[in-house]
Image (tube, rainbow, N blue to C red):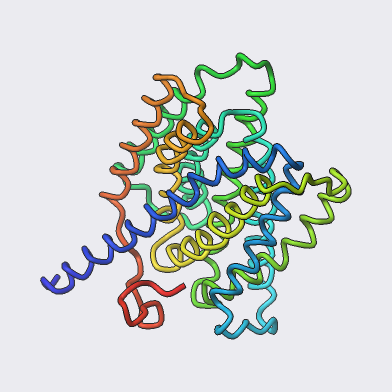
Amino acid sequence: MSIASSTGGKHQRVRLTGVVLLMSFLFGNNFIALDVGLRHSGPITLQAIAVTFAFFSVWAVTWREELPALSMQRETLWAIVGVSMALSVASPILMAYGVERVNPAVAAMLAATTPIATLILERFVYRTRVDIRNLIAVAIGIGGVAFVVAPLGGEGTSEIIGVIVLIGASFTWATGLILTRRLRGVVGGGRFVIWQMAAALPVLFTLAFIIEGLKIEWTWAFLLGAGYSGVFAKGIASLLQFRTVRLSSPLFSSLAAFMVPVVATISTYLFLDETVLGVQLFGAALIAISVCVVIGSHRISAPFGQDDIQPNGLPSL
């Protein structure tokens, strides 16, 4: 391997790691936004409004891109529908129901099971080889989640249900990442996210109307929560995540979930005046250690292509 190739690989790793950290910040604060929004609407209604914000924000960023034609293979169309239902319908709804029942910081800690779920699903779907260091990282991550969950249950079955729902949301999100990999080279990041959200919106509003009656308290707090969740966590972060999956792998993209608890814990303390227990912080520390192990052992599977680089050297959206 040449020195230039080695240097390029290191720079590429640094770029993608930086994108993952940015995604962590955006996703981490999303739990605070959901907690605020849920005080003024039901979980499904909140997510329907948030995805609406996301749709228009993504369109504003990518409006110059030509939307992909729908005359594509049936398998590709089903993959788009599957990703849409997983990432923009099922996982967000489960996440909101979970945040209703547990502390936002704890919910973020449980979201760290996403890389574990992704690693498991990748193994069965793509028959990928599991590196021993990844197994060690997963073991450390599971141990961290155990410490996070251990103190729960004081509020009765509600918290336990919240834990189960949040882990289900992580596996659903991982499923979406796995399906996204099937679309490599088919549609661009921004164009794909637009179709993904367009397919999700009718489903979300239908469910919100049937189950919750689309009841909303139109306050500035609700608009702030739904707006942040839509524009930043679902819009910008989704563009970044799709790009990361295309340039690397679903596992590497899901690593953002390992750093989300750190961001969410700090934000929960600063903005909601809620605290977490020391044992839960220890669990979050174990999760953060596990991400270092995985990043150190992960190989970037695809280089940045010319179509992915802007004149300023940053990945295009």
